[in-house]
Length: 219
Image (cartoon, rainbow, N blue to C red; front, side, top):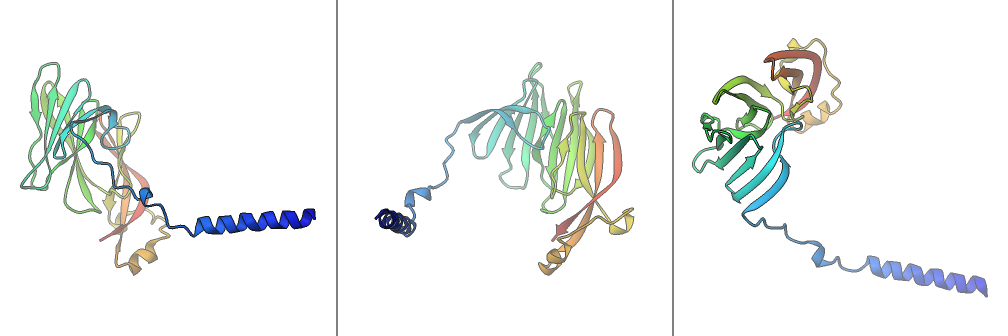
């Protein structure tokens, strides 16, 4: 008798599970994305690469925002008739406004580290440019420009070096990196590109190219 009761209970559990599995998914699960209500603020927001400074982010519309770092406030507004953004850094202690130069390729603010500011450039998705600016004495100086591969995003190390992969020709590499996905990329109609690890010391303004390489898919 105990075996029959146990078997009956197991069957009921199985039927209940089957009925639950056959139900139509709850439509409430497919909720639309949450709409942002302006003005929108977010404290300790990280804008840009890993290692960049955090600040207070405030957006008054979908087309413009300001991020306050305590020493600087950076105001960013999307260009209405051209690619890129209008970028202005304000020195809080003096109120001095530093306007980043407009560029034909457009420029997109990618955060700051101390008194260094990063602006991303270009229209291609697989190879980008990066300008590094420095504020000193109330003036803005460009201290570095490079092409980089966004396949692995740049970062700022704790010691103050900008790490990134710069494009490199295959013939110029000391050794070819292992690239397990290369054949699939070719089947997908993509080219194989290569990058070399670079370290730019922001405070010393010194560039080091390491014998470390990576492979990436290119359009």
